Length: 461
Image 1 (spheres, rainbow, N blue to C red):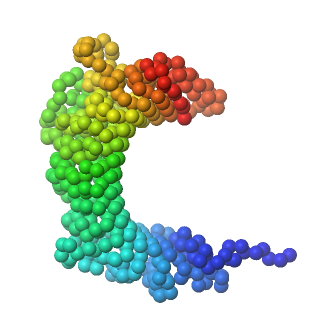
Image 2 (image 1 turned 90 degrees about the vertical axis):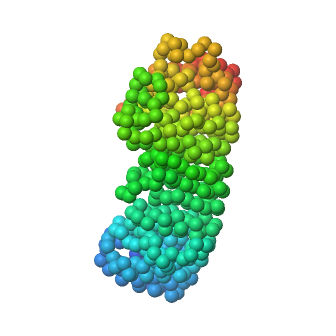
Image 3 (image 1 turned 135 degrees about the horizontal axis):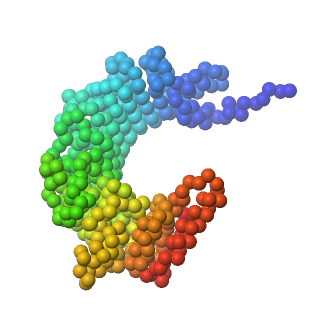
């Protein structure tokens, strides 16, 4: 019997080079010494990914030798990734980074568990289009060139995911030194100034050890997409992005007023119940996105809009409003959002269960009808009745009595409804028949609810 043919090794060198590029570089190097056919293919690798996760011994020597081998015989390297979970000689790491920046690389990704300070005087490239700095890879901020010098003239995507640097001004300088930047991802608390950025993603999951700025500025006039998530709300925002088409907001305040939010006092307050905090203001931030066509809000953002946005602007261009419910958060701002969105066509809600409050208004049925009548004048019209919403999408519908009453409220007041899409979340049962029966009970109950719109069709997914 003839030996089994190695069909992979019979592929052209260029194809095998692409295969090796999909592997971590240490595995690609191992494959290159297993047979004569693969011996010279390492030079065709266009993606270098180094990680000391499995074994830090000999890691620096391996990176040195591999860079010499590949860069001497190849000029097609596109991506360099370095992941360090152990301490290494900083001079050697600096040399790797400098070597990459001097070549025609397109992407550079640096990630380290231990702090490594990069010298900014040589931190520049004429070819790089994507740059990521993660965790403890930080810039030192010394020896910066004069303002106006372009450090990365072709860079289009910049991800600053380092959170330990005290000298945050260097990051602001870096952003301004990228003239064609289109996408900016931030995990550092800095202001952003860029006339070219179109997509901005900001995530501050926790407070840094240093004092956070009292004012945060975003001057990005070309911005069309904003994803902003913060574990704290800034004192004041100065923004310039009136062209934003889609925005996602998750604005968290560490402490919300228990009494003002959920208690019997219906009056708004200017301070938290403990009296120790001054209310922060997100009015400028919200006004900056008032021209959006699509808006996504977290449960925390609903709270922030209610407490820290005075007044809530009118969203004349808003076509799609999406928000998520939380059993600990109320819907106080929902009626105002609906009234202030005159052209709204699609309403998406993830979960209908929320905290019962005196301020949810007539967007829901969480307060007893008798109590509502005492609080509302007879001539007032339900906010849902004036909505132009044509599509209602509900995610995570469990079919409880409260959810069914809420759906009845929607169907009985949204006069322009044409399509209702409901994502049913049936309870997990041990037997498949029980699941099917539960699902049918939920869907049958919904389809029997009265609808004010004769064109309304209900679909399940």
